[in-house]
Length: 243
Image 1: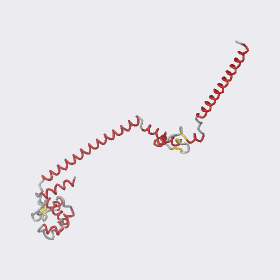
Image 2: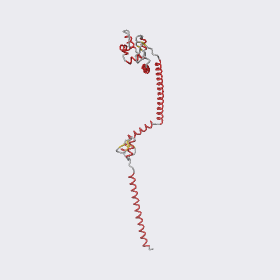
Image 3: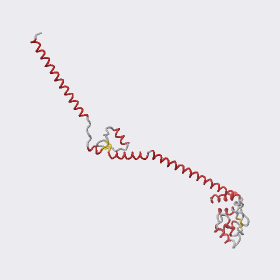
Image 4: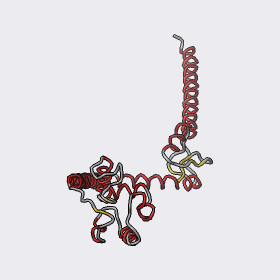
């Protein structure tokens, strides 16, 4: 081969290779520069001093995160879309207090108190039930005794002050009225007595007096004889009222 023709070809190839290498270096440099710019652009900026003073944690970027924060009891700083430091402190304090109040030790103590209260209530109920049952038994016994006891007739025209005083439903004032009227003249009937003795002037008081044995000239008030059902009812009512 002619050496004169080879030398220009070699020179041409060397120049072409150099130009290719320079182009590749320029392309690589441009790519690296673009990557560096992109990295700087994507890097998050540091929060400002104002943000750090007002906010707790990262900004709340979505509506869902803000709503959840408010449901959890936090206040939202509308300027920075973040949880306020004040509300974060309050929530933390509240959560800490709740955990302290619901610790296993505290819960066990509260359950013990509840169990003790239930036991004491059950005991009180049992004692009350026994007391009520005893009161009923006593009342029934007294009622039976009163029903079984014979009623002693007391004649209004002949009874002493002591006999009148022992008559049930006849108080001291009624006895005094009877003894004050009797010297004037005898009581000749129940109608006469209820007109003259104020304490026996009503149907109820007259029937009670008759039911417990008061008589006028040996006669009980009609319908309220000691053996009548009305008289037995009145005596039973007296026992219930006494208890």
